[in-house]
Length: 109
Image (cartoon, rainbow, N blue to C red; front, side):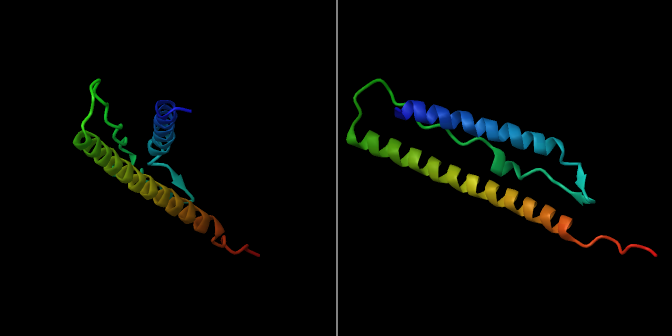
């Protein structure tokens, strides 16, 4: 699989994740056992930057280093955003699980 095809498949997965999270955000006013579920922070759901488009010309060593550094920084920032979103989801799941594991009211005699 070429770099362009691999990037395209990743570029498709990210919007799909955002659509799934948008559905969750649409339910942000919903409650589960009385607990309010808020949407994830917008900083975690903003799309990642695309890699730089390379010009149709010969590149100098300086150009290559500049483009690589920029793409690398964007990739690391996207990874941090992804990690933050995963942590948010795990926190939500933990909260829901602890809410469901609480003992219910004592049965009345």
